Length: 457
Image (cartoon, rainbow, N blue to C red; front, side, top):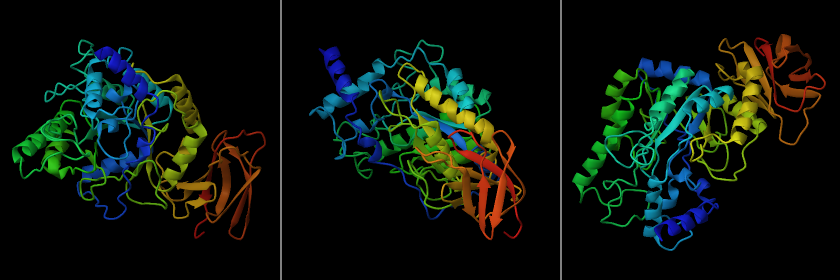
């Protein structure tokens, strides 16, 4: 009977019952009050990270087994719908997925090859989402990939093997960690109901419970910044709990001795521990010249959900071009399957992005902003010398590449070159307007152009 119930629930919840959930709670950009770090090594690492521009964010966990939205289905809030009237039954089913999660096809080297071929330069791996299921071999919880059916697999410490595989490809390494943990008795205690995403008791009434939770969370963050090689980014999610509340201020000085320049991303918590900002599923309206990153999934959901529609290579290139022109980095969300593989259609999509970046990456990587950064479909980036500019024509979906592109400002001087194929381009300047003649038969895709900016223009 238990197997039948689990089967029926899995079937129901894999059909997209939580399709609305993925847009119901996102972290927006904390637009005001950015605090620049004072640690010179953190500033240096932030500068290196800003050179990378394009990365991947993996969501992989219990939610991948039935293919549903990550974690949120067990949160009891009014925007969540479940195809069952019994909340406790649902939670029992969800926790029970730990007995089924056995990703025997997990191949982190293949993941790293795919993302490297896509032109990505940094990665962030979800070591634990809000549901509290650990994707690393923590000694502070048995609710872990390393303690279930995958326990005898030599890759049982999943995070370690992911980090090592991407480190071998010279990626910057980021550890995503959820400060809230809905499985922990010190966060959601069974004595009380769970009305929302926050702790379900009053700290003043149970200070010992809360202290246990602080110690637990700090210990796990210490594990991640001690036992897994050099970590470049500690990416803390769950902005309804601050890093300071769970010991981040005490942890960081020691963690940075082991991981020099460690970037702390305490999401939407304004202050010295939010070393870069993370607008989710969106892009700032205007250029922002302090460190930030748009995190946007490849599909509608962050994790694996069967039958999802993926963004095209052209869409991803267009998004990347806008983000970089506005001064940010772009981390793309990818959800591996419950077996531990990357879907072939995902690989194919990312391959197309990588091919474009192979030809045009000079306009993306290692660039910085320029004051006149946009005119219509044209986005501008600048070499660090400030004199070499790149114009990226973000071809709108469904349109053909025009014979001529135009923009105002950013007046060129001397030679103008299309990066793909290194073709010289003819252009004219009439007062403040630039008209560029594109070559015939170049295909329907975004293009990038290199030129020197006329001084005082």
